[in-house]
Length: 505
Ligand code: ADP
Image (cartoon, rainbow, N blue to C red; front, side, top):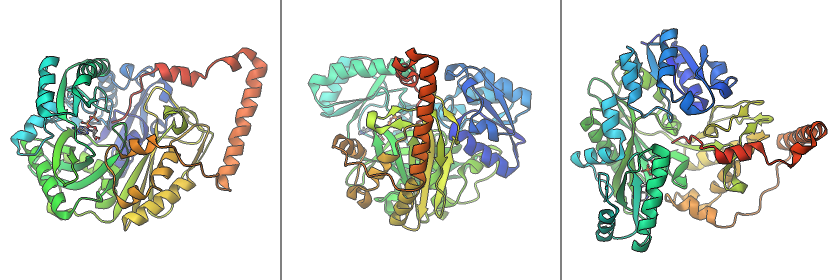
């Protein structure tokens, strides 16, 4: 087993990984940027080292700095988490050059399966159905347009290097093609430095259902079942659950087998996720492979009883998977909501800042994977994910009841959060019936929101009053010191508008 692991990430996922290290008795090393000096992952780690300024390209994206810390501290393995460098083949290569183990797939498997178009090619070769469209970049927009005409509208333009919904445009009609192509290509160039696009048939109202796979270095590949991730805002997941309300044992088996086939064909090892779109007739189509741990991995952990991070570490250390995939059947239901520092009343604009008070929910069936604490200042430089609230229950109904109860208990003051979004989703009859698709939430949000419910008496009242008092005192003293500051726009807002946030996948 490893002696010391470098955690090349921040926030809740860095905390999640170092907890696994602690339980395994492995020493861990955290890295942090200037603004993360007091972050939870730094406080909890055995050792922590500064790797530069706040901008992630000067710190968390610097392979040379990560390798330097790893060498100086004697780490024998590196866990990349998700986001940042997690899907960059240069990181496993640098690890192997430094004689360290990368906790994830090989650089080659990452290249072949992680890129959207080569992943689709592999899926086709493995007889896994793919979304109709091209599986390579189209250089010439005229050629793309004539393909779109023959395929029939609507079509979807996608960036080869895409992620996080960037460089993606739905084209409803032929007349809109040229403009959409220009927009998608320039967005892709800005976000990824690569303007190349490919084309897919735009499926109407599909579900996003993904399969968690694991593969060891001894040839065993398993599926740990599916996660339903159709509750998305602008193509970004916000609620995930396992199992999916529409997946039958037969479909689970078919999707699991397809995912395993693909992983075998790609020579894949460690944890991966095979994403599918599923239509109303329960036909499934390969979308892409995520060659890393997913944000939403806890729902799989809750229904399988497995610790996926410990499993990743064990497999990277050369251990065998201790079970066959037929042995895994989900137990109960789990659901996760992604709590962000963002303002649902202001178009979900990021709302970083200091957390004045916080009460975390506990009790039966509740898990909170968190990257913040009371008094912590959420930096504006990164993805504003605060925590993932996960509920488990014997049935979907019990899980939802627990999640609602936990959301009522959860209070954070000083910053805006998207808690109200989840209260709204969890009250919708269609959601409760499991009847939704990937555009369902966007459609819901386009309708006027119901009147806000008055705050419950109790801790919330007290913390709201405390926060208001704190703000007033601070505003008054600021006004006394320098009267001109009150007329300036919020620094968070103006910086936030300029800043390109590193959204988690
Ligand atoms: P990214 O890597 O940028 O997140 P994905 O390919 O994973 O992009 O797709 C993200 C989401 O976009 C999907 O979950 C789904 O909601 C939507 N989507 C992607 N491809 C299609 C398609 N061909 N038809 C309909 N919706 C799609």
